[in-house]
Amino acid sequence: MKKNIVFIFICIAISFVWIGCKEKKIHLGNEIRFDKEENIRYGNHPEQVLDLYIPDQKNNQQKEVFIMIHGGGWRGGNKSQLTFFTLSMMQKFRDHIFINMNYRLASATQYGIPNQMNDIQSVVSYIKKKLNYTPKLILLGNSAGGHLSMLYAYHFDADKKVKAVVNIVGPADLSDRSFTSYEDYSFVAKHLVDPTTLPQKIAPVNFASPVHWITEGVPPTLSYYGKKDHVIPLTQKKILDSVLRKNNVIHQSYEFSGGHLDWDKDRNDDFLIDKIEKFMQLLDKK
Image (cartoon, rainbow, N blue to C red; front, side):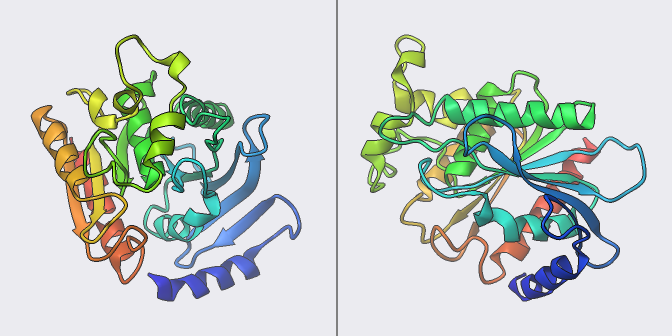
């Protein structure tokens, strides 16, 4: 996939219609064209911005929406980390709308949850208003973004419009002993969840664990984990698969060679995109 990145950037560079403006047209080859609006504000906080890609097609068909959610340990990173992968996905899913979003980062003085859940909901509300219909959603995130994708889909999606989750190296069970060796685990335990928002008798790490909220009604999930990942151990994959299986949730999971940051390297991204395509085709037949 990386061999296509230079080509993609060349295509983008030569296909800008309004240089210097927020709205642009990009051409990804093979008659694949998208309208792009970047750094759209969906809230009042500086970090509440998103990039929007809408297929340049003249029809009234209601399109599904991929929401891309970056990683960074809940307190770092930004949407630019998923730009390459988003463009690659657009080549395969040319009839879908894509949102690549930032969210409010956690810190010692600002909790990640519920803020980050509220930010995803705000993005959903934004796109509903933008499109003038309520689209089906596919949440795709890596690392912390994978965790947020699962947590929102399994527990916070009040409208039940999440069609599927693509979880890339995301922690699913924050109470897993193998995960407690994560170098920032103390931050996760103390600053990820606002304790004043918790229901009684539930620990923050349990509330923030996607597996805690899995029932038969949660969306189908595709997961991707690294065999040599020292940040998110393979025990997370095993736990997630087990709970999804017990609840009869449609799911698939795969492993790639390499560590936490290698999921989009050395053809790992090609493999993943191919599996996402087949997974979505499977769901469309249901």
